[in-house]
Length: 179
Image (cartoon, rainbow, N blue to C red; front, side, top):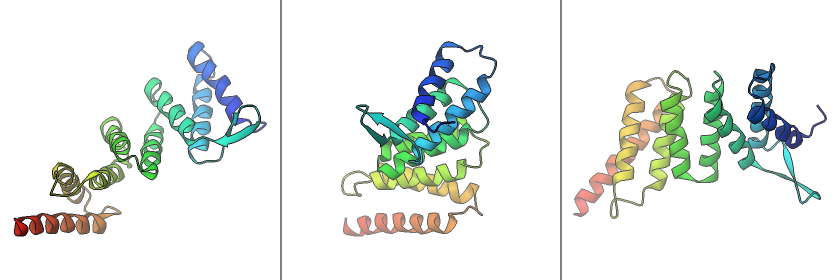
């Protein structure tokens, strides 16, 4: 309540790790979730050397990962999406792809799954080094984009997915022509 989210996180983590029979455990989980989201969004700071306060989005990722791995709440699909989106914005395509895949596998009924499929395809495209080297990433992206177009024909990003599929096919055709 005083605004010290990091201090609250330390105390909530102690409760979560040492007092699993705490009567208000669900409230503790909910508040720790809010703190994790605040850190990822850059709205919370943690002390550094007892002099400075710094924003730490990675702490938010760590908090949400801990909650997802140890507890089950219906809103953790969004937490997994935030983790994946953090890695995507950070340009860590491998971790982002893995986090989106985890969202697809562990939260199959979530409305975030369609976004995860599309975003994972983008990650593979960003990891692609071109057909001259290795086309496996482009093939994975193509497969995911086809899945997205088939499963979600009215999805938010259907036009972008179709355009990317067209681009992948054009690149492959250009390679065949060159060869």
